[in-house]
Length: 439
Image 1: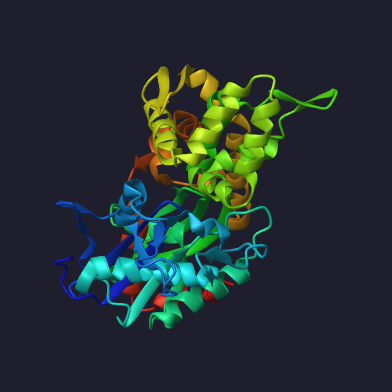
Image 2 (image 1 turned 90 degrees about the vertical axis):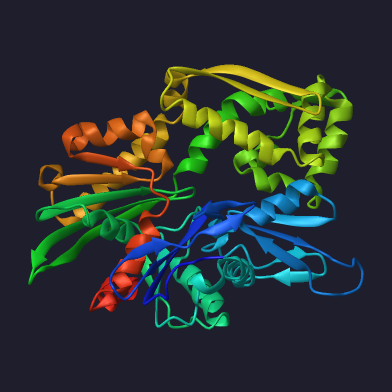
């Protein structure tokens, strides 16, 4: 439960991997809502849901838990459950209509509303969706191959409206981060803010200046791309893990030797997708392929990971490797569970080679935001990088080479966006910063 004072403005940073809520009070202070999970106070609420039936077959609505409690329920595995994480990636997908959870179908807005209800329950009085001002972050560009921003925002509004927050305003996430960062400024400055989330990387250029004794800001340009921390994780999976699980191997079909189809391994892009293989027929097909594979052992390991829900542990090992490569020249990756043993030494040079195309696309997106702002790199006086992926040396180098290392600041501030959103809601004209006002 939160001990925060009543909020004048609430900022909601609903992220692909994590969600943070911040409160701005009447005296202008801002602080994140904290959750007591197992005696530990956390400001980060994992963007996850776990559904289960209390009385299977009774026809009742499934129960839902969110955040770290969802992961706890998933890992305990005492009942048949359905675990969903990173569902924000489906927000702008017209191909995603509903998903089946036991005997009920859930739209995206159903999932988001259920998630927000769990968050509000654990936050207690600290998250009042009836507050007069609610500022919700949104990506500059939603994740997906052909994202429909209008559809995503329609779904967001529907979810918040169900919880009595139809009056919520929507602000680009890096604009929220910029407002949080601007409190550190001692002079007028043109600032580039790069926010590296789990599913998207967003960029905003803003001009901050002092006027009438207060801080003012002018948005100059925004751009975004669906490349971020999850993408970098998958590069490690694709080069180290997937080959050890049979990618690139072959099976025999009558008198022909054929390659194992690669589409099974695309499920490894996000660990929670592995659980879906049990229901869509992929697991059964893998079991059939293993019977005719020239080397069945790697496929059997893949089957074990899916069947025993080991994806979470696998991705934790992958993420730990990525983080360690930010400070080490080489890291020993190791995953050992249920008889599976995958190990390899990963060098930073290896990793940077794997993500080189991703870095190039991030670089092109920086070009895009500069063009939209109508300025050159020399006109940017400060660069603020936020999010864990901003500490990847290749990302740091990209900005240092373009803008000069002395202008770049980094902070792994999970709370930066939510704090900034709450601060925007506390300004005299929050509508000026909403996406609709900028369109």
